Image (tube, rainbow, N blue to C red; front, side):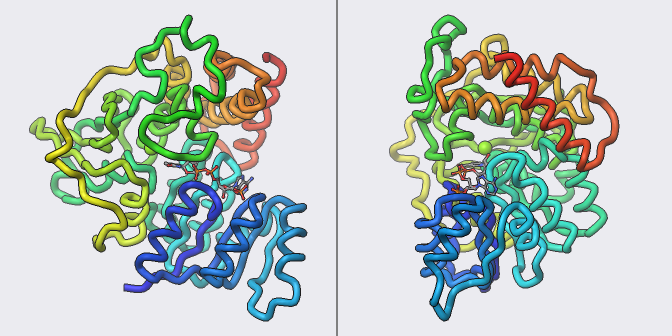
Length: 383
Ligand code: NDP
Ligand code: MG
């Protein structure tokens, strides 16, 4: 069945893999959005002919405008963060896929939902920073929130039998452990961005790759799972699965466990979010059990990987706690990628922000942005 998609964050790792899926199934692209990589965006425009394109970075938008001038088939250009929100809200697509990185994706998620669109969500930061706003809007508007994150897609797939889903007892959220699995604090102290950017199993954008090395990514995913599946943090167990073959599992009241497996390729969960509840032929190879000799399991080391401990504290505090942890992390990762702070500083700063306030209670979107700004300021003041 043909689909029309608006794809936000099209120039990134998830964005380009989403276009692989769209290409394979002949899906139509209604709108594309990106921040700065205009050459890549131009190639996507030439291939997929979207009706609208949003570019957040002003200079990049000017550059693309110049590149498109005089072309009869040029899409309508939308500018800045406002343009991104406008595109997310536009009527036309069957589904909006949000693959923007960071809290920059939150307003677009809310705009898409409020306009009545089903949302395929890769941007986990939307749920981490504004989980209660996003889930309230989903309920109010009666739209579908379809997880793209591989672990959450796995859990979602394991819960398709409604009778069993009612008896969900526990989620087993798997983690690869990242490039520094097994290392202790002393060894981590000297790790550079080059070390951290080498992920063993997945090829992803820079920010989430650093998050995987610090285990912040697993902390963000734990919070994401709380919002998506409604279990408290203490019923979500993190299980290290080094090969990234089991993408997560669920345990029911009778202690039967169902897991979802497959090769580690994001195009499987991306496609499932776009085709749910149907399944289409895969864009990737099958898992070869003649070559898969073993699967290994281990426990996470929260004593060493403080970002994960900080995220657990943040979700237990509730309210804006997770937003503060996320804001501190975004700022700390930015500084780490500029070689301005060390690897262990990321965890220290995220935990410092979480410990600095009680955070509980309801919040508005304005409160979310104020908390994000506070957390970034905290990081700058404590480097
Ligand atoms: P990338 O860094 O590869 O891509 C990010 C995308 O967001 C790019 O298109 C980028 O535009 C755009 N972008 C950056 N800043 C802004 C902004 N301020 N406003 C609007 N758009 C912006 O990231 P990934 O694709 O790796 O990750 C995207 C999201 O998906 C993240 O939330 C991540 O946690 C999640 N995710 C990613 C996985 C992966 O395998 N990569 C797996 C599971 C989840 P440009 O490039 O033009 O600057
Ligand atoms: Mg994931």
